[in-house]
Length: 273
Length: 250
Image (tube, rainbow over all chains, first blue to last red; front, side):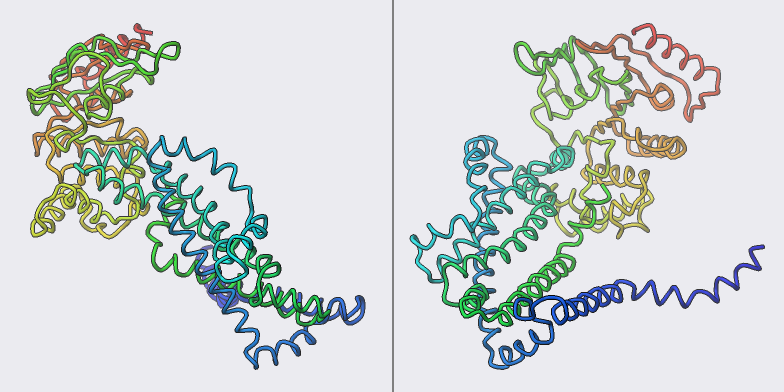
């Protein structure tokens, strides 16, 4: 029986092999292509093409904007704001989060305040940020910082608090000092939580930079959106919207790749233990 | 070597207080293999934590080599059932042993030789580059043993170390542990709720009663030759006797 079935299996192999290998990429491409085709059809024949410009018209608008560098200038400015706010927000949140996770008294004193403040989204803080910092770069840095800070803080604290007691005790009886336990056991144990928090915070940064720029900026993608809206340039609005989609997606992928490269040994085990 | 005198342990305060251990006295001598045997919730792990120095007794005294136990130290290394949590999952087998040497503050030149020796001893030399998640349960326990031995402890405190392993692997680990014990002459305090395990391993079995206020109800010296087989009349008789004592206690 087995001898008979074996050659047949061998013959069949190449087909599923190709499918298995490229399945993800093929389906991804198909999904995008179908979506654009549907969009093109709907805006040409069903909806008003002024309100929902078809993708080809959007592309026509995008090319000169790219050629003149206009779009890249706005992207660069927005990304710089996200970069600065996100980096400083993460740094501050990780430092404070580690302290909160480790020192119970500090945690109990600060936790109620944090629990209240974290409901103030960056958007809610825009009006006061403009008064405090003007419409220059500083207010945008602050708003992104604000959004990033609480997300990373809560995740870091949780990660540090959940570092397995057994692991710390095991290190302790091997002779590790409190500092060594903290640096070599607790922090690495919290790494998956911290990284997850950073990833969520990054997505939220990409979302909160837009309202910040719509309401209080003279450059950036949000400003491009707002300006195009005032001038009723729907094509340009769609160019800006697509840019946001692509940027968010690309940066999340880059973040994941970076984590895979640098932190995989800290991340890979969480599913297994 | 390890002397426990009249130890009691109370958790919580006032209304929530729970008396876990009461009047526990125990002497463990150098090179001895002692099993603490009792049903779940009898406080044997608590006693082990006190011996390790993770927890403090509420009353009584715990002396190690004539000095009171204060905090954990690498002369008394604890062993955990959940090796996946006890090991550092982001380090390979070799790096886990190296971690022990690093915190032991040993000169770096000596590291490779010691790592080699103990990985060899537990039979993990070929798997040195694997991470704990890639090792089987038994291998993880052996890695935990290698890591503990690398700091050259005097006492191994084992908290149901093989409780999560399948029966076959557990039996193999028993042979393995006895072999290590005979070769290194370590003192072992081994907590278990498995009568067969205690009868197979111990020089001395201390039976503990269910809490609150657990005590050591009976101490049984086991002078059966090793390796022991539970089918042997001597071992079988001892098994029955221990079983009767534990059932009676309830």
